[in-house]
Image 1: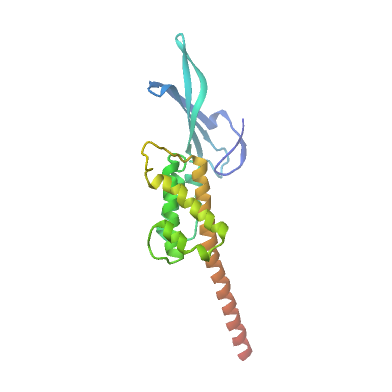
Image 2 (image 1 turned 135 degrees about the horizontal axis):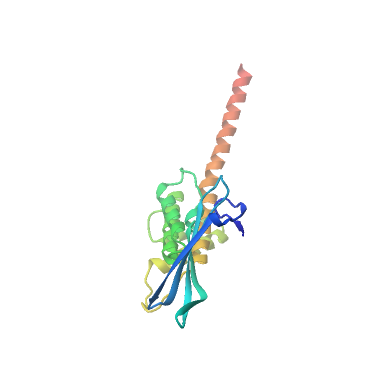
Amino acid sequence: MSWICPHCNHAASIRSGDRDSGYFDFSTKDGHKRYFISGIKCPNPECNRAVVHVFIQDLIQQGVNVKVVGVDKVYPVIPSLMADRAKDFPDYIPAGILQDYREACSIADLSPKASATLARRCLQGMIRDFWQVKPDTLYNEIQSIKDEISSDMWDVIDGVRKVGNIGAHMEKDINLIIDVNPEEATLLINMIEMLLDDWYVARFEKQQRIEKMKQLAVDKTQAKKT
């Protein structure tokens, strides 16, 4: 079996001793289901990590036997699609912002709507900290920086706010349910990552270059004197 490890991205041939599986069947109000657990151990000695998935399969009864007729859902357990892809951002970014970002990543697959809400919260923290705006509603805070950023960037920020509002606020019609899927939650997280890079990382790196230039000028001036 040819396989690529999601941890180390190395291609490998899986041997019988590198994989295992098991299952159990339940009949509930969700239907007749098989819960199939599959695990693979990466044979790359530098990685040697586990990859685990849970497959929820649809069953039908055929006499005394049951037959799998399809896969209802697949849940990545190790690694979780988003939880283990959160980027390592520098610690000069406020800890509260990074915590919200990582939590948004960790639940993007299990609860996309909650992840979108955390992305919205992360955005609000970034605007308050980076732009030093007066705390208010997120809508007013975004409006206050509209003239400071490009129109494209403003559209991105307002988009994160609008999608995040789905989880943060109940609709006026409580029977109206607007969902957020994992792909949409991932898009919001990608936008947060872009803002972290464009605002915090770019500012820090720019300041580092300025300081190096200042120091170079000092060193050259001192060299002329000596």
